[in-house]
Image (cartoon, rainbow, N blue to C red):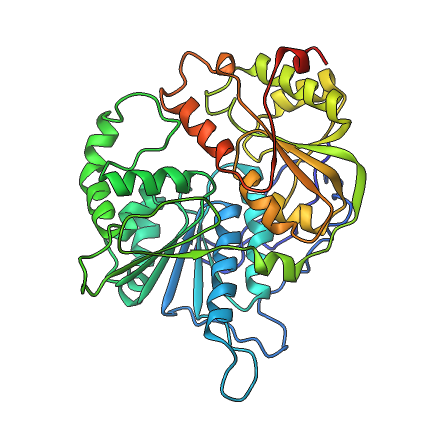
Length: 416
């Protein structure tokens, strides 16, 4: 199992600008074509300005994809403003990115790399060990409250996050922007339009456990903050998305075309073999592990795939089994796949199950010869614990994908 080497960074205290280095064992091989980023404590002197720590815009992220989309949003906001009066490029928005760090080592590693890219763009990054022990939440919230009180605009990547919902109750910002958290954005917009509670699509059950009931008032307040104000109101809600969504009236939509990614990386070198993109549907309890591994093997044989790009949440045990049974080289990327693919080398065909990348990769790879295909999830693969909404949601992800080839799973394909 190969894994691109993450960036070395010095240890830091919670809230500092430099995220701490993970301890994940022996150094791993770096993915060809993705060089290590040099660590920077401040942007280089190239004319870009660093945002002040008390900047007008505050962004909260908990995953690498969310941080990527915050960078895309900032790039789009700069482009929309146009050149300055002196003819020079407009400076990026004064942006402070707060990373609410998770426990998962792979996610933390990708977030470290994305944090370096954010600093390279002139943004301030504040790394919070938000889950580092029983007192961490109160310590994190206490430290962020002054920033929340001063912020005029708040950008969030995961409206389903309890952490983010709690922080939204503390801000007086009149402008809220939601950037993509993958396909979860589609479910968020649907629930917002219907006035429903914000519940992740793969959760099974009523969502009315003890913790849900305790947190219900904060969740309800956050949902009201994310609901557009009546016409003429002073509060605005925006969505920056590459997903196919139908927003309720009052939500301002800006399309994420991955312009920053295309300007910053690539074009990639395209290889003759195909690549398969992994998913965490097994880990979330939606898809049976045996059926999933059979499907991956069938796709590899049919399309001549040689590599499997693992999702950051896939378990090591499953990946070892997958490598042994399919013969695929398993790669754990240290950046979101949109950046890995754009940098290259990448296969001539990228095969994925229903996931975010079937919407984002065609945008990131515009102008290349790379094709993207999506394989349907057979209803027989679903576990007994899968949410009743799972099949419909997954079908919607596949059916709404643009510029992709659809691969319905059949018994003939399963036989190789």
